[in-house]
Length: 215
Length: 215
Image 1 (cartoon, one colour):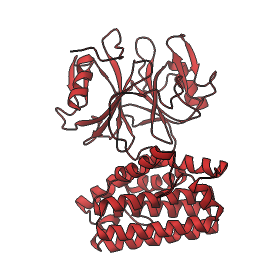
Image 2 (cartoon, rainbow over the protein chains, first blue to last red):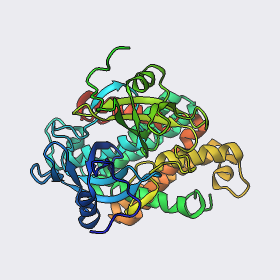
Image 3 (cartoon, chains in turn green, red):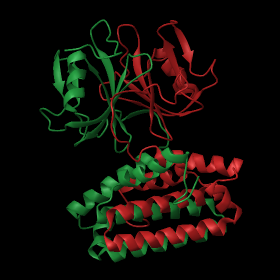
Image 4 (cartoon, one colour):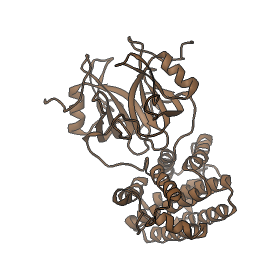
């Protein structure tokens, strides 16, 4: 096995790995890798670590089934920490929580991007399982026109509250619009990542583009 | 100083800290804290670490000015890693890059995560500086009605492409709608974080709520 360019393993031969959900941005876990584990991750795109407690190679999900498809890997500026961005199936944490970082020491608000990804996942899960008392299931039963009417209605409410200059009401209506937009996307099989790609491609070209027009 | 509940410091008295941008979701750095640094972070909400090279308390940005306002702190399931979510001013990395994790070992696509925050920041920056050839500046000059008409127009196009079942066109129109929604929010002084709070409050209550209704 060749030495992985630039990675500094510590005196135990380990490097800390930060693992992030590539879809939601959530930080899922901090674990460790030796050179073999990191090389295997780069080669197979399966999240692979070194278990310090069991003192052996640890392919995440090998026993639990909650595997990680590795989307990208990055090294930090001084070469002594690595970031895996992964598509996590099931919870990352052995406790059943999505992320291992679920014990708050200090509370605060989340970002919009992370929330949207979670909301989208919940919508698609509701569309799969159709729980009886679910708003998503009820609207879905009415067909896609019901969902799209809500998109139009909530867009109208955004217009009104923006004209009213009522910031609190506008935030609420914007949330309603975004929720139903995600719902419509889910109905047609478009993901937030598809939308992100469009926005990102525009960012790339000119810093920022308005639709069909220059920044 | 009281022992911080549940945190396991290693034999050097350190715990690894993953630092994440609370607005964009980007993982910024991996650093270390001793008990004093962690306690200071919890108390002051200033990102504080322990510098292993200088062997001293390290208040991030104390010399560079690139400080971190700590939004939340979480401990992982086995108590030996901590996550700071921060509002980073300026670049986190001493190289001038936003994140220390800027050396790709394996490349991959990005997610929605971070794009919305960046687009919103660019819009507000354009509204401040009004560059001559900017789409944002041009639309803004026409008054908020111009922006809101675009919200309505793009919502209409989302409806049409969803009915057409054209996934690519729908992703494009959804991006246009999201862009103009963020634009309208910026005009009224509502932030993506305000919208996220509304959605998060609903998540918190019942896993997921539709607007004014149960998940």
